[in-house]
Length: 173
Picture 1 (tube, rainbow, N blue to C red):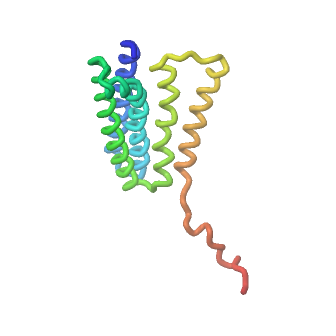
Picture 2: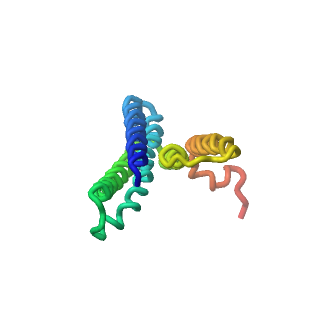
Picture 3: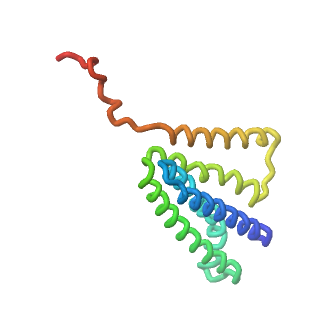
């Protein structure tokens, strides 16, 4: 992995940690039922970090474990392992915390919003891949659909009694 990619991974990691921290702090200030929903969105950021750090792990695991890795590859392998373990543990913990304040059927779709948008940003910023002209139009459309879908699913309420017939509409036996 070249030096420039390593720097972009570090910058993107710090940006994700910053967004995670800001959304978590904002959720701590809220005393309404929206706290759980914002905690759920915030819980998506550690999983974004985890997704980002899988690539350095995959690139460095072979050389590091075979004994042929250079010092920088071994350091990246160890750092990747630490990042994956910590981010997944904290992401699960924060997701569980969001369930204390909001129902899972509302929180889970919102938690997925950052994890669905981050791969697009990783592709474009970290790996600096070019996209076609049509993709320039489709990326914002895709992000808009992800955001609206997450919020629509988050607003949906689970009605346990919806499977029961309404009073007066019961079949006579």
